[in-house]
Length: 605
Image (cartoon, rainbow, N blue to C red):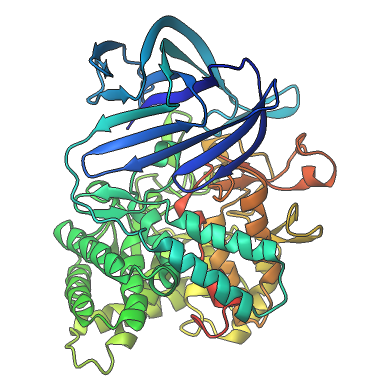
Protein backbone atom coordinates (compact mmCIF):
# COMPACT_ATOMS: atom_id res chain seq x y z
CA UNK A 1 0.00 0.00 0.00
CA UNK A 2 1.53 3.27 -1.10
CA UNK A 3 0.94 6.98 -0.86
CA UNK A 4 2.02 8.98 -3.89
CA UNK A 5 0.13 12.25 -4.15
CA UNK A 6 -0.63 14.20 -1.01
CA UNK A 7 -2.49 17.15 -2.53
CA UNK A 8 -2.76 19.43 -5.55
CA UNK A 9 -2.24 23.17 -5.25
CA UNK A 10 -4.34 25.24 -7.65
CA UNK A 11 -4.94 28.93 -8.41
CA UNK A 12 -6.55 30.87 -11.27
CA UNK A 13 -3.99 32.59 -13.46
CA UNK A 14 -5.66 35.99 -13.08
CA UNK A 15 -6.04 36.04 -9.27
CA UNK A 16 -3.86 35.97 -6.17
CA UNK A 17 -6.29 35.38 -3.32
CA UNK A 18 -9.19 32.98 -2.91
CA UNK A 19 -11.91 32.96 -0.29
CA UNK A 20 -13.59 29.55 0.25
CA UNK A 21 -17.39 29.57 -0.05
CA UNK A 22 -18.46 25.95 0.24
CA UNK A 23 -17.55 22.33 -0.48
CA UNK A 24 -19.90 19.70 -1.92
CA UNK A 25 -18.51 16.17 -1.62
CA UNK A 26 -19.62 12.92 -3.20
CA UNK A 27 -18.33 9.36 -2.97
CA UNK A 28 -15.59 9.92 -5.55
CA UNK A 29 -15.74 13.61 -6.35
CA UNK A 30 -15.86 17.03 -4.73
CA UNK A 31 -16.67 20.59 -5.77
CA UNK A 32 -14.74 23.46 -4.15
CA UNK A 33 -16.20 26.94 -4.67
CA UNK A 34 -14.33 30.21 -4.07
CA UNK A 35 -14.43 33.90 -4.90
CA UNK A 36 -11.26 35.83 -5.67
CA UNK A 37 -10.20 39.32 -4.58
CA UNK A 38 -12.29 40.82 -7.38
CA UNK A 39 -15.42 38.92 -6.36
CA UNK A 40 -15.25 36.55 -9.35
CA UNK A 41 -16.32 32.93 -8.84
CA UNK A 42 -13.80 30.12 -9.14
CA UNK A 43 -14.89 26.47 -8.98
CA UNK A 44 -12.71 23.37 -8.90
CA UNK A 45 -14.10 19.88 -9.40
CA UNK A 46 -11.95 16.91 -8.41
CA UNK A 47 -12.84 13.29 -9.13
CA UNK A 48 -11.12 9.96 -8.50
CA UNK A 49 -12.00 6.80 -10.40
CA UNK A 50 -10.71 3.26 -10.71
CA UNK A 51 -10.93 2.08 -14.31
CA UNK A 52 -10.09 -1.34 -15.78
CA UNK A 53 -6.41 -0.57 -16.29
CA UNK A 54 -5.70 2.63 -14.39
CA UNK A 55 -6.55 4.85 -11.49
CA UNK A 56 -7.38 8.41 -12.51
CA UNK A 57 -7.61 11.72 -10.67
CA UNK A 58 -9.07 14.57 -12.70
CA UNK A 59 -9.19 18.27 -11.88
CA UNK A 60 -11.56 20.64 -13.69
CA UNK A 61 -11.19 24.34 -12.88
CA UNK A 62 -13.64 26.96 -14.14
CA UNK A 63 -10.85 29.31 -15.26
CA UNK A 64 -7.32 28.95 -16.66
CA UNK A 65 -5.21 27.78 -13.74
CA UNK A 66 -1.83 26.78 -12.45
CA UNK A 67 -1.52 23.42 -10.70
CA UNK A 68 1.29 22.15 -8.50
CA UNK A 69 1.21 18.44 -7.55
CA UNK A 70 2.44 17.85 -4.00
CA UNK A 71 4.18 14.47 -4.01
CA UNK A 72 4.72 12.18 -1.03
CA UNK A 73 6.01 8.77 -2.12
CA UNK A 74 5.74 6.56 0.96
CA UNK A 75 5.21 2.90 1.71
CA UNK A 76 2.24 3.23 4.09
CA UNK A 77 3.20 0.15 6.11
CA UNK A 78 6.87 0.97 6.66
CA UNK A 79 6.78 4.79 6.22
CA UNK A 80 9.80 4.40 3.94
CA UNK A 81 10.14 7.38 1.58
CA UNK A 82 11.09 6.82 -2.03
CA UNK A 83 12.97 9.22 -4.25
CA UNK A 84 11.58 9.74 -7.74
CA UNK A 85 12.37 10.99 -11.23
CA UNK A 86 10.34 13.28 -13.48
CA UNK A 87 10.53 12.95 -17.26
CA UNK A 88 8.59 15.05 -19.76
CA UNK A 89 7.43 13.16 -22.83
CA UNK A 90 5.54 15.37 -25.29
CA UNK A 91 2.37 16.65 -23.66
CA UNK A 92 2.75 14.39 -20.63
CA UNK A 93 4.91 14.15 -17.53
CA UNK A 94 5.93 10.75 -16.15
CA UNK A 95 6.79 10.52 -12.47
CA UNK A 96 8.55 7.29 -11.47
CA UNK A 97 9.49 6.50 -7.83
CA UNK A 98 12.60 4.34 -7.46
CA UNK A 99 11.36 1.85 -4.84
CA UNK A 100 7.59 1.84 -5.40
CA UNK A 101 6.24 -0.36 -8.23
CA UNK A 102 4.06 2.20 -9.98
CA UNK A 103 4.28 5.41 -11.98
CA UNK A 104 2.20 8.55 -12.49
CA UNK A 105 1.33 10.09 -15.85
CA UNK A 106 0.19 13.72 -15.78
CA UNK A 107 -1.60 15.34 -18.73
CA UNK A 108 -3.71 18.40 -19.54
CA UNK A 109 -1.16 21.19 -19.09
CA UNK A 110 0.33 23.56 -21.66
CA UNK A 111 3.37 24.88 -19.77
CA UNK A 112 5.72 23.30 -17.21
CA UNK A 113 7.87 25.30 -14.79
CA UNK A 114 10.41 23.86 -12.35
CA UNK A 115 9.96 24.72 -8.67
CA UNK A 116 12.10 22.12 -6.87
CA UNK A 117 10.57 22.94 -3.51
CA UNK A 118 10.09 20.73 -0.51
CA UNK A 119 8.61 21.31 2.91
CA UNK A 120 7.35 19.41 5.92
CA UNK A 121 3.64 18.75 6.09
CA UNK A 122 1.98 18.45 9.50
CA UNK A 123 -0.80 15.86 9.87
CA UNK A 124 -2.46 17.05 13.05
CA UNK A 125 -4.46 13.84 13.70
CA UNK A 126 -1.61 11.54 12.74
CA UNK A 127 -2.69 7.89 12.76
CA UNK A 128 -5.38 8.55 15.36
CA UNK A 129 -3.18 7.77 18.36
CA UNK A 130 -3.00 10.22 21.26
CA UNK A 131 -0.74 11.24 24.11
CA UNK A 132 -1.01 13.07 27.43
CA UNK A 133 1.02 16.24 27.94
CA UNK A 134 0.71 18.51 30.98
CA UNK A 135 -2.51 16.79 31.96
CA UNK A 136 -4.13 17.27 28.56
CA UNK A 137 -4.84 14.73 25.83
CA UNK A 138 -3.50 15.47 22.34
CA UNK A 139 -3.43 13.62 19.06
CA UNK A 140 0.07 12.52 18.10
CA UNK A 141 0.93 14.66 15.10
CA UNK A 142 2.95 13.31 12.21
CA UNK A 143 5.37 15.37 10.18
CA UNK A 144 6.38 14.15 6.73
CA UNK A 145 8.42 15.64 3.94
CA UNK A 146 6.54 16.42 0.74
CA UNK A 147 7.94 17.72 -2.53
CA UNK A 148 6.66 20.22 -5.09
CA UNK A 149 9.00 19.86 -8.05
CA UNK A 150 6.87 21.40 -10.82
CA UNK A 151 4.08 23.86 -11.58
CA UNK A 152 1.78 23.12 -14.51
CA UNK A 153 -0.20 25.80 -16.36
CA UNK A 154 -3.46 24.82 -18.06
CA UNK A 155 -5.31 27.33 -20.21
CA UNK A 156 -8.31 24.97 -20.18
CA UNK A 157 -8.19 24.55 -16.41
CA UNK A 158 -7.76 20.77 -16.73
CA UNK A 159 -5.34 18.31 -15.17
CA UNK A 160 -5.30 14.51 -15.28
CA UNK A 161 -3.16 12.24 -13.10
CA UNK A 162 -3.18 8.53 -13.96
CA UNK A 163 -1.60 5.47 -12.39
CA UNK A 164 -1.44 2.54 -14.85
CA UNK A 165 -2.55 -0.72 -13.23
CA UNK A 166 -2.50 -4.35 -14.27
CA UNK A 167 -5.73 -4.94 -16.14
CA UNK A 168 -8.59 -5.51 -13.72
CA UNK A 169 -11.60 -7.64 -14.62
CA UNK A 170 -13.98 -6.68 -11.82
CA UNK A 171 -17.55 -5.60 -12.47
CA UNK A 172 -18.76 -2.30 -11.09
CA UNK A 173 -21.79 -2.45 -8.80
CA UNK A 174 -22.59 1.24 -8.30
CA UNK A 175 -24.04 2.10 -11.71
CA UNK A 176 -27.66 2.06 -10.50
CA UNK A 177 -27.10 3.61 -7.10
CA UNK A 178 -28.37 7.08 -7.97
CA UNK A 179 -31.76 5.77 -9.13
CA UNK A 180 -32.00 3.42 -6.17
CA UNK A 181 -31.29 6.21 -3.70
CA UNK A 182 -33.84 8.47 -5.37
CA UNK A 183 -36.41 5.72 -4.96
CA UNK A 184 -35.37 5.19 -1.33
CA UNK A 185 -35.79 8.87 -0.57
CA UNK A 186 -39.32 8.74 -1.94
CA UNK A 187 -40.17 5.63 0.08
CA UNK A 188 -38.83 7.18 3.26
CA UNK A 189 -40.96 10.28 2.78
CA UNK A 190 -44.07 8.11 2.34
CA UNK A 191 -43.44 5.29 4.81
CA UNK A 192 -41.40 6.59 7.74
CA UNK A 193 -42.71 5.17 10.99
CA UNK A 194 -42.49 8.54 12.71
CA UNK A 195 -42.48 12.15 11.70
CA UNK A 196 -38.82 12.80 10.98
CA UNK A 197 -37.16 15.89 9.58
CA UNK A 198 -35.89 16.08 6.00
CA UNK A 199 -32.41 16.38 7.53
CA UNK A 200 -32.71 12.91 9.05
CA UNK A 201 -33.84 11.47 5.72
CA UNK A 202 -30.93 13.23 3.98
CA UNK A 203 -28.49 11.79 6.52
CA UNK A 204 -29.84 8.27 6.09
CA UNK A 205 -29.65 8.46 2.29
CA UNK A 206 -26.12 9.84 2.61
CA UNK A 207 -25.14 6.91 4.84
CA UNK A 208 -26.35 4.37 2.29
CA UNK A 209 -24.72 6.28 -0.56
CA UNK A 210 -21.37 6.25 1.26
CA UNK A 211 -21.72 2.52 1.92
CA UNK A 212 -21.05 2.07 -1.79
CA UNK A 213 -17.71 3.85 -1.42
CA UNK A 214 -16.33 0.70 0.20
CA UNK A 215 -15.02 -1.80 -2.32
CA UNK A 216 -11.63 -2.62 -3.83
CA UNK A 217 -10.86 -5.17 -6.57
CA UNK A 218 -9.97 -8.65 -5.31
CA UNK A 219 -9.32 -10.84 -8.34
CA UNK A 220 -12.50 -10.42 -10.42
CA UNK A 221 -14.81 -9.03 -7.74
CA UNK A 222 -15.13 -5.97 -5.55
CA UNK A 223 -14.91 -6.54 -1.79
CA UNK A 224 -15.41 -3.85 0.88
CA UNK A 225 -12.13 -2.92 2.53
CA UNK A 226 -11.84 -2.43 6.29
CA UNK A 227 -11.66 1.35 6.00
CA UNK A 228 -9.56 4.38 5.19
CA UNK A 229 -5.85 5.01 5.72
CA UNK A 230 -3.87 1.83 6.48
CA UNK A 231 -7.10 -0.19 6.61
CA UNK A 232 -7.42 0.00 2.81
CA UNK A 233 -7.25 -3.80 2.67
CA UNK A 234 -9.93 -6.48 2.92
CA UNK A 235 -9.91 -7.85 6.47
CA UNK A 236 -12.06 -10.96 6.57
CA UNK A 237 -13.81 -10.41 9.90
CA UNK A 238 -14.46 -6.75 9.11
CA UNK A 239 -15.90 -7.75 5.76
CA UNK A 240 -18.29 -10.32 7.24
CA UNK A 241 -19.35 -8.13 10.15
CA UNK A 242 -20.12 -5.33 7.71
CA UNK A 243 -22.02 -7.63 5.36
CA UNK A 244 -24.08 -8.97 8.26
CA UNK A 245 -25.49 -5.53 9.09
CA UNK A 246 -25.83 -4.33 5.47
CA UNK A 247 -27.35 -7.45 3.93
CA UNK A 248 -30.84 -5.99 3.61
CA UNK A 249 -29.46 -2.72 2.25
CA UNK A 250 -27.39 -4.43 -0.43
CA UNK A 251 -30.17 -6.77 -1.57
CA UNK A 252 -33.42 -4.84 -1.17
CA UNK A 253 -32.33 -1.20 -1.35
CA UNK A 254 -29.32 -1.21 -3.68
CA UNK A 255 -30.25 -4.28 -5.73
CA UNK A 256 -26.79 -5.89 -5.83
CA UNK A 257 -27.74 -9.43 -4.77
CA UNK A 258 -25.83 -11.08 -7.63
CA UNK A 259 -22.61 -9.34 -6.58
CA UNK A 260 -23.16 -10.33 -2.96
CA UNK A 261 -23.79 -13.98 -3.83
CA UNK A 262 -20.56 -14.13 -5.87
CA UNK A 263 -18.61 -12.54 -3.03
CA UNK A 264 -20.02 -15.02 -0.51
CA UNK A 265 -19.24 -17.90 -2.88
CA UNK A 266 -15.65 -16.69 -3.00
CA UNK A 267 -15.51 -16.63 0.80
CA UNK A 268 -16.91 -20.17 0.97
CA UNK A 269 -14.26 -21.35 -1.49
CA UNK A 270 -11.49 -19.65 0.51
CA UNK A 271 -12.73 -21.16 3.77
CA UNK A 272 -12.90 -24.63 2.21
CA UNK A 273 -9.39 -24.43 0.75
CA UNK A 274 -7.80 -23.02 3.90
CA UNK A 275 -9.70 -25.00 6.56
CA UNK A 276 -11.19 -21.77 7.79
CA UNK A 277 -10.79 -18.05 7.32
CA UNK A 278 -7.75 -15.87 7.94
CA UNK A 279 -7.13 -12.26 8.92
CA UNK A 280 -6.99 -11.30 5.24
CA UNK A 281 -8.81 -13.09 2.44
CA UNK A 282 -5.70 -14.90 1.25
CA UNK A 283 -3.25 -14.59 4.10
CA UNK A 284 -2.47 -14.11 7.75
CA UNK A 285 -3.29 -16.30 10.72
CA UNK A 286 -6.59 -18.12 11.09
CA UNK A 287 -9.32 -16.19 12.91
CA UNK A 288 -12.03 -17.75 15.04
CA UNK A 289 -14.93 -15.31 14.70
CA UNK A 290 -15.23 -14.89 10.92
CA UNK A 291 -16.25 -18.42 9.91
CA UNK A 292 -19.50 -18.56 11.93
CA UNK A 293 -20.38 -15.09 10.64
CA UNK A 294 -20.04 -16.47 7.11
CA UNK A 295 -22.45 -19.34 7.81
CA UNK A 296 -24.98 -17.02 9.46
CA UNK A 297 -24.66 -14.62 6.54
CA UNK A 298 -25.49 -17.38 4.07
CA UNK A 299 -28.55 -18.38 6.10
CA UNK A 300 -29.80 -14.78 6.15
CA UNK A 301 -28.99 -14.33 2.47
CA UNK A 302 -30.97 -17.44 1.57
CA UNK A 303 -34.11 -16.01 3.17
CA UNK A 304 -33.77 -13.01 0.83
CA UNK A 305 -32.62 -14.68 -2.41
CA UNK A 306 -33.57 -18.39 -2.07
CA UNK A 307 -30.30 -19.31 -3.78
CA UNK A 308 -30.27 -23.07 -3.20
CA UNK A 309 -26.83 -23.59 -4.76
CA UNK A 310 -25.34 -21.32 -2.11
CA UNK A 311 -26.92 -23.39 0.66
CA UNK A 312 -25.55 -26.62 -0.87
CA UNK A 313 -22.01 -25.22 -0.88
CA UNK A 314 -22.43 -23.97 2.68
CA UNK A 315 -23.70 -27.33 3.92
CA UNK A 316 -20.65 -29.02 2.42
CA UNK A 317 -18.31 -26.51 4.06
CA UNK A 318 -20.08 -26.66 7.43
CA UNK A 319 -20.09 -30.46 7.37
CA UNK A 320 -16.34 -30.48 6.73
CA UNK A 321 -15.77 -28.07 9.62
CA UNK A 322 -17.92 -30.08 12.03
CA UNK A 323 -16.30 -33.39 11.06
CA UNK A 324 -12.84 -31.94 11.70
CA UNK A 325 -13.91 -30.50 15.04
CA UNK A 326 -15.55 -33.77 16.09
CA UNK A 327 -12.38 -35.68 15.22
CA UNK A 328 -10.24 -33.48 17.47
CA UNK A 329 -8.67 -31.46 14.66
CA UNK A 330 -8.76 -27.71 14.36
CA UNK A 331 -10.83 -25.59 12.00
CA UNK A 332 -10.43 -21.84 11.62
CA UNK A 333 -8.26 -21.59 14.76
CA UNK A 334 -10.74 -23.56 16.92
CA UNK A 335 -10.75 -26.96 18.62
CA UNK A 336 -13.61 -28.66 20.42
CA UNK A 337 -13.23 -29.44 24.13
CA UNK A 338 -15.96 -30.35 26.63
CA UNK A 339 -18.67 -28.51 24.71
CA UNK A 340 -16.50 -25.45 24.11
CA UNK A 341 -14.66 -24.10 21.12
CA UNK A 342 -11.15 -23.20 22.25
CA UNK A 343 -8.82 -20.87 20.39
CA UNK A 344 -5.98 -18.48 21.10
CA UNK A 345 -7.07 -15.28 22.80
CA UNK A 346 -6.13 -12.98 19.92
CA UNK A 347 -7.98 -14.87 17.16
CA UNK A 348 -11.24 -12.95 17.61
CA UNK A 349 -11.71 -9.23 17.05
CA UNK A 350 -10.29 -8.08 20.42
CA UNK A 351 -6.89 -9.10 19.15
CA UNK A 352 -4.28 -6.74 20.62
CA UNK A 353 -1.06 -8.31 21.90
CA UNK A 354 0.96 -6.05 24.17
CA UNK A 355 4.42 -6.55 25.60
CA UNK A 356 4.30 -6.62 29.41
CA UNK A 357 7.53 -7.19 31.36
CA UNK A 358 9.17 -8.56 28.24
CA UNK A 359 6.38 -11.03 27.50
CA UNK A 360 3.80 -10.69 24.74
CA UNK A 361 0.40 -10.82 26.40
CA UNK A 362 -3.03 -10.85 24.69
CA UNK A 363 -4.98 -7.98 26.23
CA UNK A 364 -8.11 -10.13 25.95
CA UNK A 365 -6.74 -12.02 28.98
CA UNK A 366 -6.92 -10.31 32.41
CA UNK A 367 -3.55 -9.20 33.69
CA UNK A 368 -4.14 -10.97 37.00
CA UNK A 369 -4.04 -14.28 35.11
CA UNK A 370 -0.34 -13.87 34.36
CA UNK A 371 0.65 -16.43 37.00
CA UNK A 372 -2.30 -18.73 36.31
CA UNK A 373 -2.09 -19.40 32.58
CA UNK A 374 0.14 -18.97 29.56
CA UNK A 375 -0.45 -16.30 26.89
CA UNK A 376 -0.17 -19.06 24.30
CA UNK A 377 -2.92 -21.18 25.86
CA UNK A 378 -6.31 -21.67 24.26
CA UNK A 379 -9.47 -20.14 25.69
CA UNK A 380 -13.21 -20.24 25.18
CA UNK A 381 -14.24 -16.81 23.86
CA UNK A 382 -17.89 -16.08 24.50
CA UNK A 383 -18.68 -14.42 21.16
CA UNK A 384 -16.97 -17.19 19.17
CA UNK A 385 -18.97 -19.92 20.91
CA UNK A 386 -22.19 -17.90 20.63
CA UNK A 387 -21.66 -17.10 16.94
CA UNK A 388 -21.00 -20.77 16.15
CA UNK A 389 -24.21 -21.83 17.87
CA UNK A 390 -26.15 -19.11 16.05
CA UNK A 391 -24.65 -20.07 12.69
CA UNK A 392 -25.45 -23.78 12.98
CA UNK A 393 -28.93 -23.05 14.29
CA UNK A 394 -29.64 -20.57 11.47
CA UNK A 395 -28.33 -22.89 8.78
CA UNK A 396 -30.36 -25.86 10.01
CA UNK A 397 -33.50 -23.70 10.14
CA UNK A 398 -33.28 -22.52 6.53
CA UNK A 399 -32.44 -26.01 5.27
CA UNK A 400 -35.75 -27.33 6.62
CA UNK A 401 -38.11 -27.96 3.75
CA UNK A 402 -35.42 -27.76 1.03
CA UNK A 403 -34.96 -31.52 0.81
CA UNK A 404 -31.19 -31.14 1.17
CA UNK A 405 -29.28 -33.74 3.14
CA UNK A 406 -27.70 -32.59 6.41
CA UNK A 407 -24.82 -34.62 7.82
CA UNK A 408 -25.27 -35.72 11.43
CA UNK A 409 -22.06 -34.00 12.53
CA UNK A 410 -23.68 -30.58 12.08
CA UNK A 411 -26.45 -31.50 14.52
CA UNK A 412 -23.97 -33.11 16.90
CA UNK A 413 -21.69 -30.07 17.06
CA UNK A 414 -24.65 -27.74 17.47
CA UNK A 415 -26.04 -29.64 20.47
CA UNK A 416 -22.59 -30.14 21.98
CA UNK A 417 -21.88 -26.40 21.80
CA UNK A 418 -25.35 -25.58 23.10
CA UNK A 419 -24.86 -27.81 26.13
CA UNK A 420 -21.36 -26.44 26.62
CA UNK A 421 -22.56 -22.84 26.52
CA UNK A 422 -25.22 -23.53 29.13
CA UNK A 423 -22.69 -25.32 31.33
CA UNK A 424 -19.83 -22.83 31.09
CA UNK A 425 -21.20 -19.42 30.07
CA UNK A 426 -24.86 -19.11 30.98
CA UNK A 427 -25.88 -17.21 34.12
CA UNK A 428 -29.46 -16.45 35.11
CA UNK A 429 -29.41 -12.66 35.46
CA UNK A 430 -26.07 -11.41 34.23
CA UNK A 431 -23.81 -11.13 31.23
CA UNK A 432 -21.75 -14.23 30.49
CA UNK A 433 -18.01 -14.25 31.20
CA UNK A 434 -16.10 -12.96 28.19
CA UNK A 435 -13.30 -15.52 28.41
CA UNK A 436 -12.90 -18.94 30.02
CA UNK A 437 -9.82 -21.09 30.55
CA UNK A 438 -11.54 -24.42 31.30
CA UNK A 439 -8.49 -26.42 32.40
CA UNK A 440 -7.88 -24.01 35.29
CA UNK A 441 -11.56 -23.08 35.63
CA UNK A 442 -10.75 -19.38 35.10
CA UNK A 443 -13.52 -16.98 34.09
CA UNK A 444 -13.25 -13.30 33.23
CA UNK A 445 -16.41 -11.66 34.55
CA UNK A 446 -15.52 -8.17 33.31
CA UNK A 447 -18.70 -6.79 31.67
CA UNK A 448 -17.99 -6.60 27.95
CA UNK A 449 -19.57 -5.99 24.59
CA UNK A 450 -18.63 -9.55 23.64
CA UNK A 451 -21.14 -10.69 26.26
CA UNK A 452 -23.71 -8.38 24.70
CA UNK A 453 -23.03 -9.95 21.29
CA UNK A 454 -23.68 -13.39 22.79
CA UNK A 455 -26.92 -12.15 24.34
CA UNK A 456 -28.10 -10.76 21.00
CA UNK A 457 -27.24 -13.68 18.74
CA UNK A 458 -28.52 -16.34 21.17
CA UNK A 459 -31.89 -14.72 21.86
CA UNK A 460 -34.60 -17.36 21.49
CA UNK A 461 -31.88 -20.02 21.38
CA UNK A 462 -30.34 -19.81 24.86
CA UNK A 463 -31.85 -16.61 26.22
CA UNK A 464 -35.60 -16.05 26.39
CA UNK A 465 -37.14 -12.61 26.81
CA UNK A 466 -37.28 -12.98 30.59
CA UNK A 467 -33.58 -13.82 30.96
CA UNK A 468 -32.64 -10.93 28.66
CA UNK A 469 -34.83 -8.62 30.73
CA UNK A 470 -33.06 -9.77 33.89
CA UNK A 471 -29.70 -9.02 32.28
CA UNK A 472 -30.66 -5.59 30.94
CA UNK A 473 -29.49 -3.73 34.06
CA UNK A 474 -25.94 -4.94 33.34
CA UNK A 475 -26.18 -3.89 29.70
CA UNK A 476 -27.60 -0.49 30.67
CA UNK A 477 -24.60 0.14 32.92
CA UNK A 478 -22.36 -0.14 29.83
CA UNK A 479 -24.28 2.32 27.64
CA UNK A 480 -22.57 5.60 26.73
CA UNK A 481 -24.62 8.70 25.93
CA UNK A 482 -23.81 11.49 23.51
CA UNK A 483 -25.31 14.95 23.00
CA UNK A 484 -26.80 15.55 19.58
CA UNK A 485 -25.14 18.25 17.47
CA UNK A 486 -27.04 18.53 14.16
CA UNK A 487 -30.15 16.35 14.46
CA UNK A 488 -31.40 17.58 17.82
CA UNK A 489 -30.17 19.06 21.07
CA UNK A 490 -30.73 16.38 23.70
CA UNK A 491 -28.68 13.50 25.11
CA UNK A 492 -29.33 10.05 23.64
CA UNK A 493 -27.81 6.60 23.92
CA UNK A 494 -24.87 6.21 21.54
CA UNK A 495 -23.15 2.85 22.07
CA UNK A 496 -21.66 0.47 24.62
CA UNK A 497 -18.33 0.20 26.38
CA UNK A 498 -16.14 -2.57 24.96
CA UNK A 499 -14.92 -3.62 28.40
CA UNK A 500 -16.09 -2.01 31.61
CA UNK A 501 -12.70 -1.33 33.14
CA UNK A 502 -11.05 1.77 34.57
CA UNK A 503 -12.14 4.80 32.56
CA UNK A 504 -9.15 6.35 30.86
CA UNK A 505 -8.68 8.25 27.61
CA UNK A 506 -7.82 6.26 24.52
CA UNK A 507 -4.16 6.75 23.67
CA UNK A 508 -3.19 3.61 21.76
CA UNK A 509 -3.19 -0.17 21.74
CA UNK A 510 -3.29 -0.52 25.52
CA UNK A 511 -6.75 1.13 25.57
CA UNK A 512 -7.86 -0.18 22.16
CA UNK A 513 -10.41 -2.66 23.55
CA UNK A 514 -10.93 -1.13 26.98
CA UNK A 515 -13.21 1.68 28.11
CA UNK A 516 -13.96 2.77 24.55
CA UNK A 517 -17.00 2.59 22.27
CA UNK A 518 -16.88 0.64 19.01
CA UNK A 519 -19.84 1.33 16.68
CA UNK A 520 -19.48 -2.24 15.38
CA UNK A 521 -21.11 -3.36 18.66
CA UNK A 522 -24.11 -1.02 18.41
CA UNK A 523 -26.37 -3.15 16.14
CA UNK A 524 -26.22 -5.92 18.74
CA UNK A 525 -27.40 -3.43 21.36
CA UNK A 526 -30.26 -2.43 19.05
CA UNK A 527 -31.25 -6.10 18.67
CA UNK A 528 -31.43 -6.55 22.45
CA UNK A 529 -33.46 -3.36 22.82
CA UNK A 530 -35.91 -4.54 20.15
CA UNK A 531 -36.28 -7.90 21.89
CA UNK A 532 -37.30 -6.06 25.07
CA UNK A 533 -39.76 -3.81 23.22
CA UNK A 534 -37.60 -0.70 23.64
CA UNK A 535 -37.49 2.06 21.04
CA UNK A 536 -33.98 2.42 19.52
CA UNK A 537 -34.83 5.70 17.75
CA UNK A 538 -32.48 7.78 19.91
CA UNK A 539 -29.46 5.56 19.38
CA UNK A 540 -30.07 5.39 15.63
CA UNK A 541 -30.40 9.16 15.28
CA UNK A 542 -27.34 9.75 17.46
CA UNK A 543 -25.15 7.58 15.24
CA UNK A 544 -26.42 9.47 12.19
CA UNK A 545 -25.66 12.71 14.02
CA UNK A 546 -22.02 11.72 14.52
CA UNK A 547 -21.76 10.86 10.84
CA UNK A 548 -22.79 14.35 9.68
CA UNK A 549 -21.26 16.49 12.43
CA UNK A 550 -17.68 15.30 13.01
CA UNK A 551 -14.88 13.23 11.55
CA UNK A 552 -15.12 12.41 7.84
CA UNK A 553 -18.62 13.60 6.92
CA UNK A 554 -20.72 10.72 5.65
CA UNK A 555 -18.61 8.06 7.35
CA UNK A 556 -18.29 6.55 10.82
CA UNK A 557 -15.20 6.33 13.00
CA UNK A 558 -13.56 3.10 14.06
CA UNK A 559 -13.93 3.80 17.76
CA UNK A 560 -14.57 6.53 20.33
CA UNK A 561 -12.68 7.47 23.45
CA UNK A 562 -14.54 8.44 26.58
CA UNK A 563 -14.09 12.19 27.21
CA UNK A 564 -11.73 11.68 30.15
CA UNK A 565 -10.26 15.07 30.97
CA UNK A 566 -13.02 16.57 28.80
CA UNK A 567 -12.66 17.57 25.19
CA UNK A 568 -11.27 21.08 24.51
CA UNK A 569 -12.84 21.25 21.03
CA UNK A 570 -15.79 21.53 20.97
CA UNK A 571 -16.37 23.26 24.28
CA UNK A 572 -19.29 23.42 26.69
CA UNK A 573 -21.68 20.49 26.91
CA UNK A 574 -20.30 18.97 23.72
CA UNK A 575 -16.93 18.51 25.42
CA UNK A 576 -18.59 15.65 27.33
CA UNK A 577 -19.23 13.74 24.11
CA UNK A 578 -17.21 10.62 23.26
CA UNK A 579 -14.25 11.54 21.06
CA UNK A 580 -13.86 9.95 17.60
CA UNK A 581 -10.37 8.44 17.32
CA UNK A 582 -8.24 6.20 15.13
CA UNK A 583 -9.54 5.46 11.62
CA UNK A 584 -12.20 7.94 10.49
CA UNK A 585 -14.03 5.73 7.96
CA UNK A 586 -14.55 2.13 9.09
CA UNK A 587 -16.62 -0.40 7.13
CA UNK A 588 -18.02 -2.41 10.02
CA UNK A 589 -19.02 0.82 11.76
CA UNK A 590 -21.09 1.73 8.70
CA UNK A 591 -24.15 -0.42 9.37
CA UNK A 592 -27.36 0.53 7.54
CA UNK A 593 -29.83 -2.35 8.03
CA UNK A 594 -31.02 -1.21 11.48
CA UNK A 595 -32.20 2.03 9.83
CA UNK A 596 -33.99 0.24 7.00
CA UNK A 597 -35.71 -2.11 9.44
CA UNK A 598 -36.74 0.76 11.69
CA UNK A 599 -37.85 3.44 9.24
CA UNK A 600 -39.39 1.43 6.42
CA UNK A 601 -42.54 -0.32 7.54
CA UNK A 602 -42.56 -4.00 6.74
CA UNK A 603 -39.05 -4.08 5.24
CA UNK A 604 -36.76 -6.51 6.98
CA UNK A 605 -39.07 -7.06 9.92
